[in-house]
Length: 200
Ligand SMILES: [Zn+2]
Image (cartoon, rainbow, N blue to C red):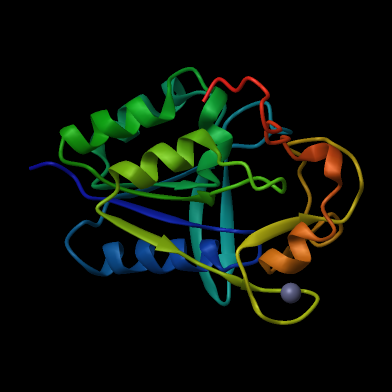
């Protein structure tokens, strides 16, 4: 049977990890008991395990740099979960292709991650997986300025670094208005002016 793909996405601070942990718990209590949770880390050289926790829920995750590190486990697992799936883009295999192979071999997949960076640009892996998914759970946070639903991640430090690890010190959730109003203009791709040749 073809596996089921669930994508959990949204800005930072939207509860994506909690939603992922919930799915892991459901799987373990159900029939799909063998769950493999994968993470990547920029600062870890070799595979190691790490426990991800949130709101009293916990799961052990394998921190990896190459899919070849967990090849045998990928074949055994009933459910493979990816935490921060946007960081799997530059691995030894294309993450989207790898997930297609898992689904084709009957393995269920849950991929949680950011849908856009702080500039509002889509992460390719998350976007493609959302298109392929049986279920997309798009979560929202609360705007740090006004408390309204927030779909964007706002970077509090003014630089143009696209991917930078950080949490509350660097980022906060913002509604569209409070995200866009304070976005440095340089970081936005400029729409072509009237009469200008566009390749669209
Ligand atoms: Zn707001």
